[in-house]
Amino acid sequence: MKIGRKALLVLGVVVIVAAIVVVGMFYFRQAGERSVLNDRGDAAEARRAVLNASKQDLNDQLTSAQSSLDELSWSKPPPKSAQFPESVESIEYGEYLFEIARICDVRLDPLVFPKPAAATAGGVAYSVVSLILPVSGTQENVFKFIEVIRTDYWFASTKIKSINMNTGGSATINVDIYGYKG
Image (cartoon, rainbow, N blue to C red; front, top):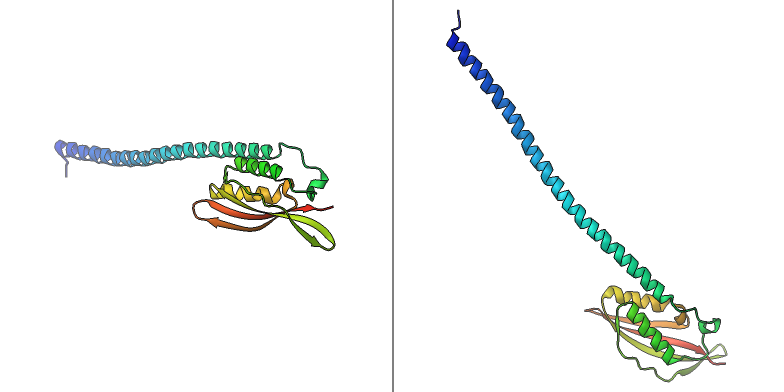
């Protein structure tokens, strides 16, 4: 059986069309994958930009926190007697409390320093000033303010009696400041 020229021509065209269809399928599949990869790459670039901005923001916050820490350390440490001062100087403590509030970015309401109360323990006489520190700000900054009071050397003879946190970022901190009566 002899295949005619037209049949060979048709068979050749069918083979060529089939080859073009197969190559076209591979091409369009690759193009689709390339498009998906390009979309993923664009999304990754966008996330990278956001992460770089976040990294810069965190670095700025770190620098700010280190500056705040440096500001808290701006004054020289008090003398050894300040660990248990002979008297509680309300002006000095008040100024320092307002300075800490400024650095911690909280609002400290006006303070009222009551007259020191006399107390005795183990034969040692001392005075106690009970203060109420009403502060407001973000919860994070209020906690930072409390931590500074708890750890700052100017408040080594201070006891935090209670902390009442309110919704909205305000707190009332009750402290006792002890002073030695010689």
